[in-house]
Image 1 (cartoon, rainbow, N blue to C red):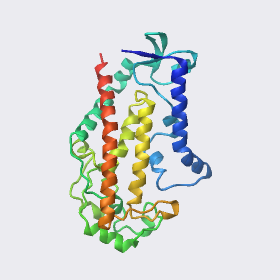
Image 2: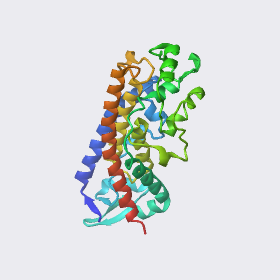
Image 3: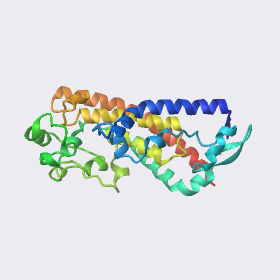
Image 4: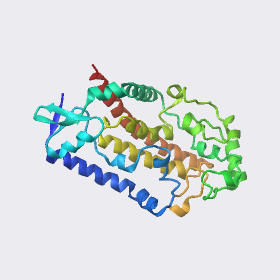
Length: 295
């Protein structure tokens, strides 16, 4: 059933969203203006194809009618139309038109998220995917070559060889250095994503942001922003546990080459998995609501 929001209500939600997103991306935008790169935070705007401006755009939950003249410019936004609500005409998402175009995407995202949620979290990977990406790679070809390896090349390679690598995420695995691929206990592919991804994986948690923005503009701004904030926090752990020395940026390492470091990583991983699980559940509910509205 449609719900109507008065102008003062929805514009307040929109302003709050803008302020929260601005706080999350201001550092990235400032560095971009200076032509500076950042090995941790830039990932969210280079690996993921959603700009800060797109993230900043607030959308209500599907079925919501925005009242008042302030909503009229949204008629120029993709997916919006004039709709009739319980409090009169306004502007909202054209749900039928959205599903006609994006229904397969909604079903795909829902299927993947439900499959992930049905599995137990595996917490024994210890972030070795980042180590596998530099395994036996010449220094000049390392992805973040500006940043030194904490243990040097030889000791970094020894860590990879001395641990059991069990990466279940295809988009992490595909960046492994070639000699490291055969060391992985599974061989994930793009086609096997639904069968292999699991809720303990840091990259699976980060990817909630990707699946959220792929559902835009049907994805409520608040939920999209929470997924981005999770991805941002997870990325910090991802790189703190990596072989790189990022102490000059204020990131203290999580030394997964030690028992204490592995325990710390698994504890943080468990907390992120729980946080991601709550967001995943809300995203599945949204997909269910959208598909229930299909003709």
